[in-house]
Image 1 (tube, rainbow, N blue to C red):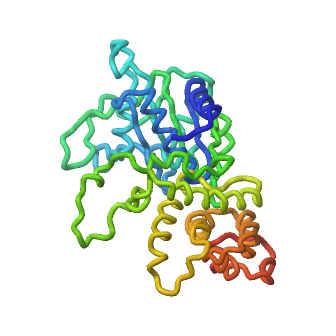
Image 2: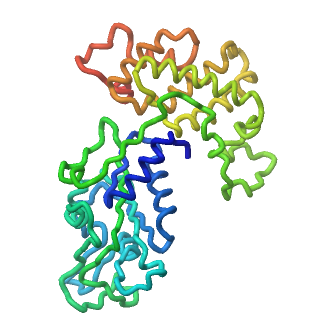
Image 3: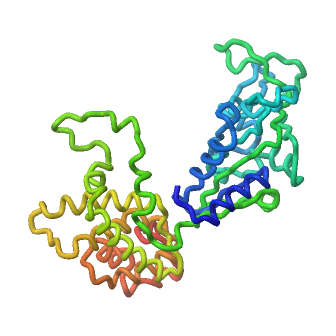
Length: 360
């Protein structure tokens, strides 16, 4: 994880001082990584939970489930077992895991209205400090419920008490189509804005791409060409060639950053760009009639076309098209910019368009 030192301090201060933290920022800025890393650092595995939000959620019952009076059993959702991991046990030995503060990570929190499905948390954490949060589950005191007809009965408490001093960490993807949290939500939360690096540094953190995975133990057959996407980059990892590719990517990103006033290329984008560039520069010399002049620069601009342009806001997209339409490099990016928004058609619609609107 590559963060500026002040960002590291900020993240730690946020989770220590606030029980409801929202990590906001564009895709690829490390929101989920930060939330999960903090949860991993501060809470034991038995006290960590992850809630994956769905677009159709409206009420707390969409998270944990609800009692069906017609069927006479509790129809549980996956979130119930996750929330039960955060249950408050005041009688627990102080050294026991269940006495530790639980951390609940809410992934893609703004896919649905936070004040709806997470209502018990929004209201329960209205004060700056709360020992516990109460989440009602059903109205039947002492009810022994089933989570389905085929399952053995188990007790579902009428009320779930989460604590002590619980932390809820939500991730919010910010782009021009995202739904912003309601004011009552942001008013109760510590909102941490994560951004792409202020300056391009394509080699920074690239070793994170090569953490051991199960795939590294797999031995493909001699005819297998499609396997680990990192293969070509791995072959130049300790060679000057990688620095040359990174320099070409930095040059293209710097031009874009200077034009926009900020860097829209996240660390994830950089990694994906370098993977693409390593393969493109390996393949290109073997393609008949392909002009290999300025090959690294072509690879860098092509990579921006694939991984950065589709995620730009309309304002950023318009400025990027103007910039690279006049690129001295004969890249796909230059030709696609000319085709997506012709020089005489920038204002034909009367408003700014993004990548996808330009296609239509």
